[in-house]
Image 1 (cartoon, helix red, strand yellow):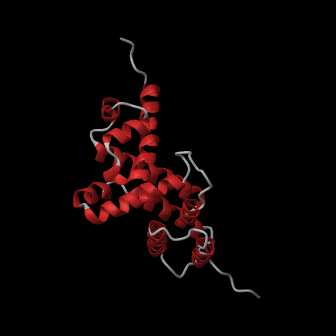
Image 2 (cartoon, rainbow, N blue to C red):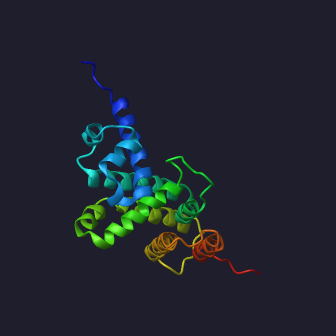
Image 3 (cartoon, helix red, strand yellow):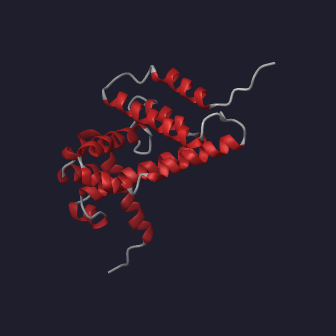
Length: 198
């Protein structure tokens, strides 16, 4: 029997994550049945659960993967850019890498954090990357003199994370994303350093 390469295993894992992201976004955690996961990924339950122990492990891996991708955006452009990406949904966006798809996962994470204590404990172990990336980015901005210096970086980190959660809640209610651009402009402006004009 031919040996399966690591590249093949990695590609199969990516296929499962991308397909399941679409499934969880459309149907939520509870509605993402094994049959629906099979349809969304194009793979059998055996293939899916060869890579992931169970549905919760799959969902946690997906949420962690999305958080990692968001952390990469934060490192380059900041947490406000992640928020801008979440509201910039092009018509008919179908690419699983598009940030619009992160929203479905983020909404489901928020819902489960409120209702599932075991999930909350498991997620707490995995959710620090985005906070660390935000803090590191703000620290670099502070050192470069671009960030207001009357508020500690940890406070600004918490502030931006709170805004992100509020935005996710806003979008979860089905409210318009169109009006959020100017709000995010204000958020971004509120953390910048303002030099006195002469």
